[in-house]
Length: 171
Image (cartoon, rainbow, N blue to C red):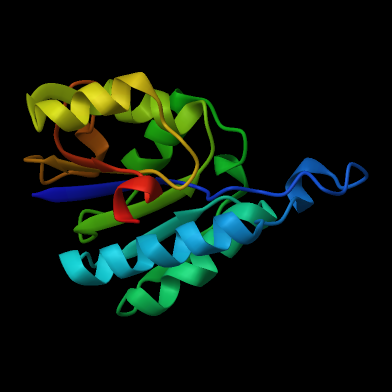
């Protein structure tokens, strides 16, 4: 059994229009949302063995706030995740070693949302599926499970949707 956590970065700041997109930081609301998601990870006992994170400041800052809630994952900052299409994100997951039981991917829309919708097989949490299909806001987390023992075979419709949680759900 493999577990996939797909986390969209928390709310970023647009205060400085001179900043490059990669450099945009989290705003106050985003830092609070990331902290709530960290508490949620702790309460649920989520323990990803590998974290794949975009190099953008807002994704790294989201991860930095979340990391104290994670026992000791292997963290990989991966340039391919920034502004990646769904197929690129799926290919990145397929490269994981079989020894990796779970992964947290911290990234961006629209690729992250499309990946979640593509992987979900229609089974699992129906309420979460309806919410996922409606909107994937900043700071939102999708939890998927796959009966596959090999990341290489991960494909469309290959996962059960376990949950979809937004920061607003945790307030």
